[in-house]
Length: 361
Image (cartoon, rainbow, N blue to C red; front, top):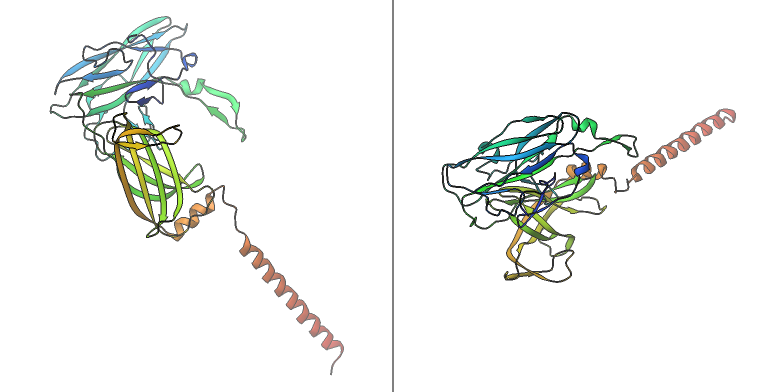
């Protein structure tokens, strides 16, 4: 089975550099098929994974086909690979900033047209010129080519409405992953805990630890067990486990620990993470990941730890906007009680003065 499969769709997910391909073909007015490259490492893969020499140039071809009776304008965009806060590698456009360790950004080594017009019932070749950096390195330059119908977001607005009566916009795109490397021995991933802070996801309080893979290779099958304690204490306040995550080369993401409706409290805390990567039956590190029926072996293991502080004003701000926290109106009831008491006292004083005027001594 060669490149005759549909290209990877939006939200492409690698697992040991294999693809998951959800099918939304009925939503597209065009089709995408990458052509094999002579420098393809594995001809069975339906994306570009290229082995190149330093300073080597090549022109890649992607076949586009329009089977409709209307002209279709296809927009194309080159993006670096990033990791989102669900621990999923993204190859399409997003707002994730480049990690500070990223030396080679795919966008700097690829030239391609911003759009191409497909006439009705026609096919065309989309050309992508790539250029490997002119120096040796062991790693992967990773990203993707996103194909989307121009103005398709207007045509794909759903007729369904949510509970607020707002139309829901569905946007579909093809993503063809593009990997460039100079050797198949790309070294080992690493994992660092850069920072920890309180934050919110979906209007709910979480503690987020920013995990970084500073090396130019994928970190696959990442599994974590996280514990949060008061600084200097061994008592776990919050725990969380995640599994089946993946990190792109030279990327970072925020691993979230939910508080499940608890209020944030000011103080100094410690986050500890036991992390495992790359399932391997010959791996040296046994661990039963969340969702697994039995213990597995992993090739990599990291023990990470970092202290962090929650300030009172930050805790109050986040607690006030957390939709799961019941609001405390005790102070309101106290204030109402004080006002009622004052009114009663004023009334009693007024009545006494009135009685004193009627019955002078």
